[in-house]
Amino acid sequence: MLNKTSVLLVEDSRPDAKFVRTLLRPQAYDLAHVASLADAACELETKKFDVIVLDLSLPDAKGLESLESMKGRNLEIPIIVLTGLNDDDTALLCVKLGAQDYIQKSEVNASFLERSIRYAIERHESEQNMRRLAILEQREEFMATLTHDLKNPLIGTNRVLELLAEQAMGTITDDHAELLLQIRDSNKILLLMIQNVLDVYRFEKDVDAVVLDNMYLSDVARSCLREIEPIAESRKIEIKTNFADAQRLVNADAFAIRRVFQNLLDNALKFTPAGGQIALNIAPTNGSVCVEISDNGPGMSNEELARIFNRFAQGRAGRKYSPGTGLGLFLCKQIVDAHNGKIECQSKEGEGTRFRIIIPAA
Image (tube, rainbow, N blue to C red; front, side, top):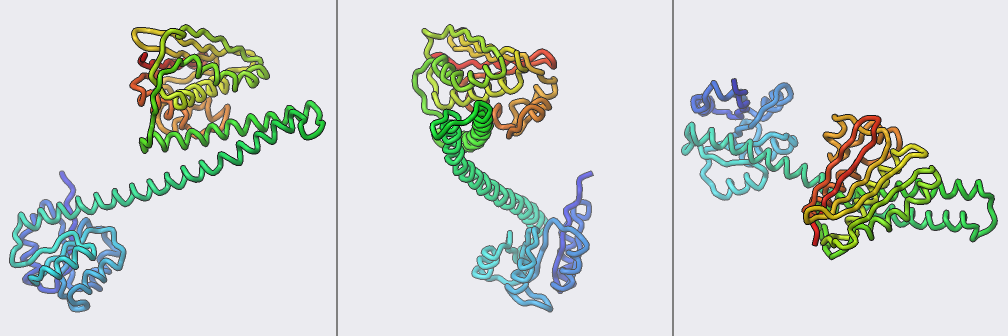
């Protein structure tokens, strides 16, 4: 059985209230009647209503005062004005003050009133959703601005750390240099997370999402590998590469594709145990170029695998091994989708993980 629509009728005329009651089917509507704004306030404190049907002439308020008083309570309930007054100016003012509809008693009938109630509720819900969406967009814009402003200080800090570790500003011990580089590497992880937040925002807003040009995926891969090789060497992780795409161009955004490689290689490095192995293969296949990045880390369960590309998704291993936003793989899928490509993941617990990306050839 469908839930009834609960209606609060604020009407001081008993004959008019009785008339409204005859118009609304009891099997579809639950009608409560009060004769004043004061009584309405008491009723609203004890019960929730889907809609308010309000007369403009009441013992404790006249004309627009009735609507203004009701709206002043900041109720998240749509209001329909039902009045005997035939005045277009008043009708317009009621709508401007927030009424969902303005109905003259002389013109109302059952179908008219039911339709007005249904539309009022739907319009109100739509307005609420639009307001929530606007608030979310404002928050996202704030976060995008904030994360953007955090980048430059971190980049500057990393440069200072590197200069100190290189003893450009005075002699330090090897142990101190190693600690400084560890701080730098931690900052790089933070920078990657910040950049993921910015890129997700950019792709969702579709602000110049991709700028396409002919390129080799292996060129981007080599650039990303140079960044992680020192960390891999320090953990005795072997990175095996096999690039067979030298004669196969793709039409892609080099910056965006670089973000994919960075996230996937960072994940592989994060989950591969010391002394382990990462494999990066790039080869042409059926009019496309295929990239495979695999590791021999802890792997994932089928449950984790099913949601790995969801926004904010993080597996148990991710939470254990390193902090993160859960946006890296979500961003990778956004970027690959923007290139009309395909990304998939294969993984088993205890057997490692392999990501496979297909990008159409130029």
